[in-house]
Length: 223
Image (cartoon, rainbow, N blue to C red; front, side, top):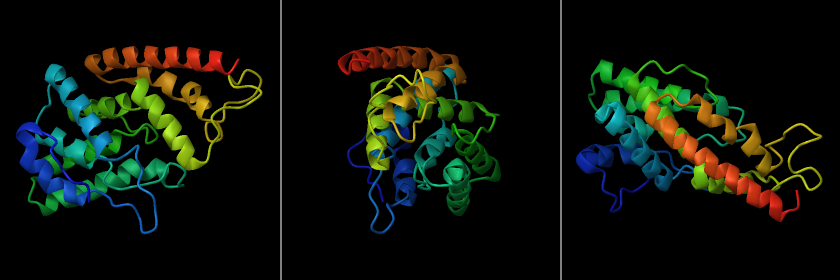
């Protein structure tokens, strides 16, 4: 169970404290995923309510959607990875129904969580879903995205980059094997798919930061 600690969750503090005990524990003998921990949750929360301050939707549906969006843990290399958001959405619906939430609110949270995932490819049909998707994707880009990329690559046993062709100029991209490939395969492309004007503006800034990082990194390795 993740602890709320001294984090200020604003007016939703009681709700967050009620929901945090439902978050996924690392499996027995497993290793916690530092790319999807309480710090990630807090960053997505900050992103979501920053976007909602401009776009709307800053209510308990958004709060619950953020807290529970990763409530089912699925490893990056699991065959169930593309189902992760659906599994989390179903679990979130069970949790909230058990807490007495109305059917409409439960469905709103379920859809927001189900549609937030990049790999699920589910259209966002509500403002809450668009805000959550943007908030979560923002955490995959910028300097925090760089850190998470290399951290995850290390957990998955990937190399930093292809030693002979780091820019993949004469080979297909393979981000399962090389961390640097993931920037061109996915992270540099994310900004084009943001759902809100506020999220898109932040995404452009963070994508520019990634491009700057890559230029320095590739210069250092002599690419």
